[in-house]
Every structure is written in structure tokens, then in C-alpha cells.
Length: 322
Image (cartoon, rainbow, N blue to C red; front, side):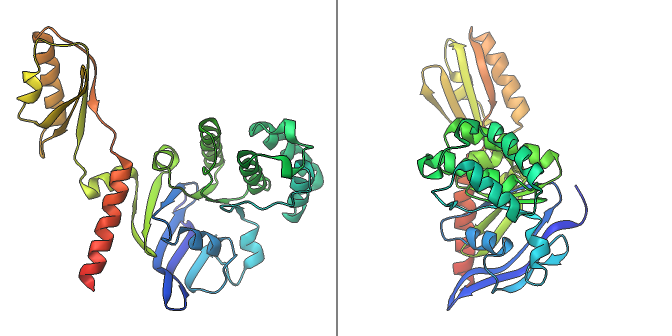
């Protein structure tokens, strides 16, 4: 990844009367990174995205893309961006093929290149069969895929996706995540917002948490987990139960072991406990008690809890400041 940010926000503020949708947001996106933008409804995610896409031009602060001010060099910055809004709007009487070719022309992609890319992308998104179908006859998920295709047609350096996974079935979500990784491998920077935190974890290098118009924190999922200091959970599953579970309930490194279902336990690691030592001891004790383990591992952090904790902390800090 390059050292110079592709996207730079400095003191970004957007007010509607007395209401501040964004308040002093500072953010830098590096070349080639995937950045997940999360926050409660009304936090300001879509406002940020619309400013980057040039749909909102009146704001305070500075917004640069590839060193160009979005307000002063609009045509240059627009050519770098592929944008998918929350609700992609198309002329419903057009066919898929006609709509994409028109949008490709608007993006100044040569007709021969558009023809090739439309075919490739329709195949990639499993819409080749719908090429001559009128848009009014597409399902919501198919229309969402069409919106993604138009955002990718001119191979943008910056791909901006507002809730791109909304309304997609699991196979289509997985396909989109593959496409995001492909674009990253080709050097593109991707900014996307989502409420589906497990999907954010799957593809984002970094995450930014926005709350009430303020950027609370940024970092990898691991960074945010460490920052919040979420409890570490241990998951244990037996393929053959031991004589008793005293080695679980009596282990000094564990807090509140609970049998979730027969043969499947979870427990919280005590603060300061050595996870590797605890796991090693449980394996030995299980075997000594005649049991067999199917799984023992630290559980993945609950991203919903992580997100809620960060938002609660931000709001508590704001109330304390007032």
C-alpha cells in the first residue's frame, strides 16, 4: 500500500440548520485498502459517502481524492470513483444491456471496451441470462448486482459502496466479497458501509466507527477488540464426555463455565490468564478423565457486542463533556 493516502478528509462537517450530520471527521484511506464504515442509523455514513461521490457539495472542511479537492476538481475526482448508492436507480424501461452501455459511455469508456466489460461482469455476477431483460422485471437482488456492475465498469481507483450487501442472499454476499478482494488485488481502494458486521470482518483491512456524526475510532478488528478489552471466550466441545467436568468448573483460569448443550461448553477467560496454558491443561485433564475433545479454541469476538460497546462509550463521553 502506498504511503500517500488516496482519500483524505480533514475536519469534514455537514450541517442541516442546527443539526450536524457530520462533525469534524478526519480520515485517511490508503491506496489498495478495504475500509469498512459502520455506525448506527443516522450516524452520518451515507452523508460522508455522498460528499465523496460529489452528490453533496456544500460542507465544511477538506475532502481530497488522489490529491484533488472534490469541490474544485470535480470532473477529475469523479473519473476515479465507482459509486453504488443504497438504492440504485435505473430507467426501468431499459434492458440491462442498454442501461450498462449508456452508463459506460457516460463514464467515457470506449464502446468496444464497454461491450467486453459488460459481458465479463454479467458473467461474473451471474446475470448473463438477463442481458436483454428489462430492468423493471429484475428482482431486488438482481438490481443490486446491476448497480455493482455499473460501479465497476470503468475500473475505478476508488470504489464507494453504500450498504452493498443489503438485500443480497448469502451466495450473492459471498460473491460480492470475492469481487471486493479482486478489486483490492488490482490496486483499488474500497470504502463500504454495512450493518452486517460479520461481512465487514471478512473483507475489511480497517474499520471506522461513526457515531452521531463523529468518528469514534479506526483500526483493524483486532485493534478494536484490544481497545475495548472484550472478555475472551473459550469454546470446548467433547466428542466423548469425560467422567466429570470438574477440570472445567474448577479451573482457576476460567470464569462461569456453562454447558450450552450436551458436550458443548463455553467459559470466559479470567483477566490475565494465559490462554495457551489454560487450553493445554484442559486437554490433559480431559484425556485423564477418559474424555475426547472435538474442539477447543478461543471464540471469535462478538462483533455486535464490540460495536455496541464502542457506541456506548462514545455517547457516554459526549454526555460527560456536556
